[in-house]
Length: 298
Image (cartoon, rainbow, N blue to C red; front, side, top):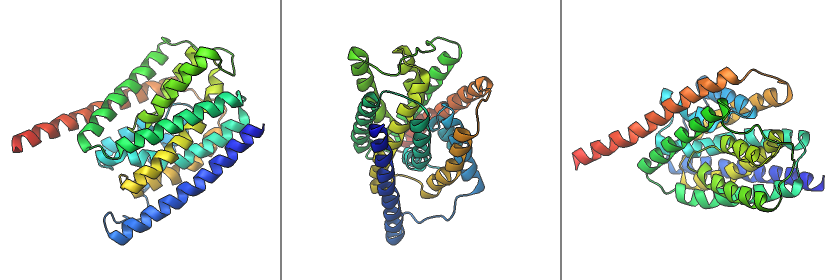
């Protein structure tokens, strides 16, 4: 119980630092006129935040669906999508973490260890991702989206195990999970969400899938905020779109986490697979089209 309380306090403290950093970033960008704030989020941006975070709370994930919406509607430039995802989804995922830390039991020592390596991975990854040019970001995100769609598809057709009953991990299973979580932390900073691979990982290791939720949400919240601070410093995000994700997302999380008890998600997941494949192919096509155009100009 003490460890959970410390984690909740740490989440609050990090959230305060994150909000303060976001305010400083916005003020600095306005003062320098490098990227003026466009005003309040549009209804469409708020709706994207609401829908993606609602289903994120139910375990579908938000990065792939948000990226698909941005590509379809052409709301955010490709090189700014990752930073916008990390910054905009951070606070809604903090709310998710609070809900699941309180509601779902899991070994606190394992919980802390997995969160710590995830945050370390995101910090290292953000240092690389904030300096990548547009084309590598497009390729990484397109490939990651295809991988996410593949995970969703295989989960839907029952390729992966349903999970066990364990609430903890020991010996080699814990070591393996720590290594994978570090990698997932780094991949998150390239716009590749961690929920689908995390659920598959913990199920394959024999954990109760419900126990994965406080681990996933707490890790994702801290990873996103830590990495988001580095993207703020680099200015690699769309402020208005990120604000739309946050303002639309927090009430959606509360609705899904506190009021929704059951929802038929099978058909919805098939729709998400199709949408994510569309976003992936669009992202990769953009990368190679721009490369050919650059070669032609050269």
